[in-house]
Length: 566
Image 1 (tube, rainbow, N blue to C red):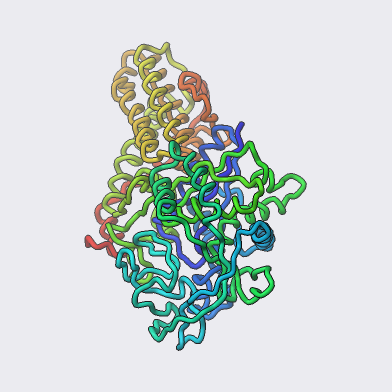
Image 2: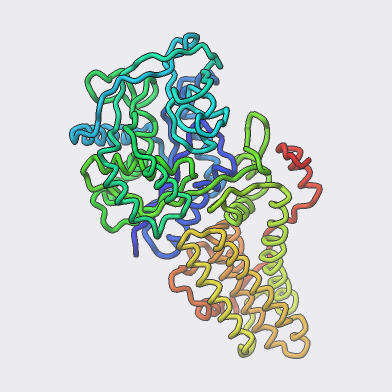
């Protein structure tokens, strides 16, 4: 058994998560965590809300709340949304926790002691009308690199370039919209990235054969351009106070404390049962841990450059990421999701329209791995109707209904197996081996293609075997065919469990089984699993697993969520 540490990018607490957020990091990390548990690995799956920085201050001001109360409100919203999507975090915490503050102060003190911190007076935008400095996200303007006119003062989400507020063209205050701005000097602390650049480059080079191109190419692009000292403090009130004389009025930059939040959240998790858990077993001197990160491509620079550089500068034996799964973007019919413009379906609304497994399956089937993907209700309905309702759901219904009506409500005995079953077992074993390979390599679209092909193998088998015809002349042979089909349902439940946990459970319930009765996925043997459901095992037909999405319902959803194709 291996120890696998899995983290998902920490969602900003102020954001209402949409489908792009779900598939960009959260859902793939959950599928991978569930898959590894079924391999028998010891998994720690960590996430939480990113609560510091200007987004929280701006959001709280708009709603007339104290920042802490604002974060409490939206942390609860995130937690509930992810629970509805069946994301199986071992712990969902917060970057504002005392545990994270302790670790942020420790790490800063170490890199300061080691000579990686320097003081600089910098020019920063000051708003006359707002009577305050405007750090990072308090400033919006035009990106000097790509011309995007809604770039933020910390990063352009269009071209992913990391920015300073003073880089922006035609800047304006995010708070008031005022352009009555001037540049003033203020003193801040910087991490000397050039001092760790060579070691960082050597470390990233070791990831070339493994990291997906989305992650590796972004990291190499940064290194090629040359690293510059990075400001790690801000003129804000909300955040961790800087533990250095002369800087007590500053807080740490959110992108300094947020990645450390992975360790802080793990410490939160461990502190709940200190007699059984030690967070350092995963993060400090942990030689037996494989660490996998999931995030959108806009977050890759911070996790491939800034965060590893910070850990290197401590001189301590921290756990570094082994595999960084960078994802591209999911768009809404080629455009952006926008809550303010009522365009696109957001995660909380999605699970009110259809069960979570509908969305989980579609999103993983269309995961934006190597390039952006686009969501539309037409595509969504087509996949649900064809794959889930037409292939998987139809197979389960026809097998159980036929057996119940023709033979009875227990798994039938039947006669000997034939060459037809041997071919089925061989084809399935090949397909399943490929599915497990792709899941292990986090090539999710390929894995989902194989999963669908596995369901198709079952449909092809029953179509060729024709138990409805055979039963007229050879009841024992028909019984054997249907027993094989029932064991296929159990196999489908096992293989579908990482992606569609509720559907997997529903299939098992038809045989009086629970999720704990599922076979492990390591060394999965088709021939062995085909004997798991023995003759005499009771079953129920149950309701259909899925509902067909009608054209009328599609049009209703388009109107409701601002589809441009209406």
